[in-house]
Each structure stands twice: as C-alpha cells, then as structure tokens.
Image (cartoon, rainbow, N blue to C red; front, side, top):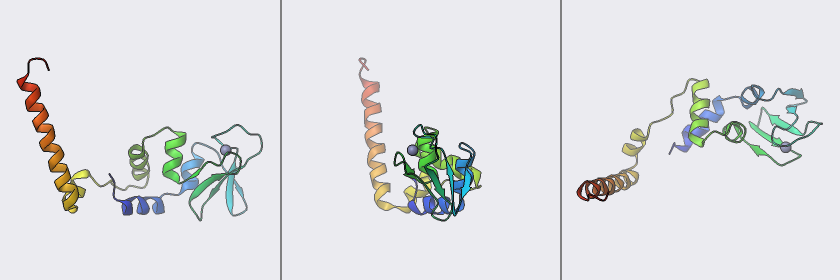
Length: 131
Ligand code: ZN
C-alpha cells in the first residue's frame, strides 16, 4: 500500500510525455502529443498524450491512463514497480510500509493480527512432522 497523496505528488512531478516518449516516440500535435498506439495496431496516430492533463488516450482502442498505468500496460509492470520506477526517475523515495503502519492505527492492529496469525501457523508447522 502506498499513500494516495504520494501517488498524486509523484504524478505531478513526473512528465507523462517524457515517460511515454522513451517507449513510443511522440510527435507534437497542437497542444498534445501523438503517436501510433502501442496498444493496438494502426497506421495513423490516434494515440494522444496530454501534457496539461497528464494522461494518455487512444481514440482507436480506448486505452487511457496516467504515467503509472502506461508503465503497467506497456512494460507489464506491477503497480508497485511502476510507482518505484517513476519515483526513481524524479528522485522521490516511495514511502515504506513501516512508516504507513505507524501512521494508521487501524492498519497497525490489522497488521499485528496478521503477524500473530502467521506466527501461529509457523508454530503449527514446526509441530507437525507432516508439514
Ligand atoms: Zn489504441
């Protein structure tokens, strides 16, 4: 889990045009950038990237999203990996789980419960030769 405001800050710092341009060369088209869509086969560009709105949209196949979803869909990254990848590029550190646990008492107790359950199962495993 990554705090939502971190995601917002990250997306505000990352330039989606720069991110996508590394994978799919973009051409300026008016206020936006355009390219042939990497998500479906086409000969005329219907894939656009908006530097002001910071999202991409394809009029051909309907692909749509942020820099994070682009990396997830194009590079097949997991959400966390996509966030890490973008954070690295802009020199931000992804908040660790521990920081979050301390900040949220409800998550903290849930986590404690999970840890207790895990310890219980580990103990059970040690006690039965079948395991
Ligand atoms: Zn498309």
